[in-house]
Length: 90
Picture 1 (tube, rainbow, N blue to C red):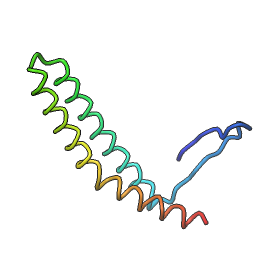
Picture 2: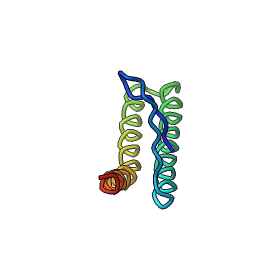
Picture 3: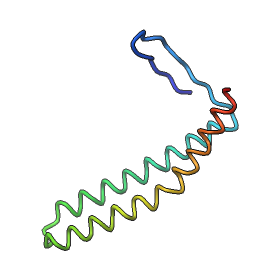
C-alpha cells in the first residue's frame, strides 16, 4: 500500500494494489534498489581509490554501462506492470 499527500490540497490518498500485483511490484522495486545500492557502493570504491585517473574514468564508464544493463529488464517489467495497474484502475 502506498500512502501520500496530494498537493496542494494535502488530501490523504491510499493506494491498494491487488494481492496478485503488489508482491511483484515490491519485488521489482526492491531489486532495483539493490542494483542501485551496489552501483553506488562500487562507484564510491572507485572514486576513493588511488588508481590512475584515466583508468578510473574507464572503470566508472564500465560501471555505469553495467548498471544500465542490469536495470533495463527490471525497468521494462516495471513499466509493463504499471500499464496493467492503470488498465485495472480505469
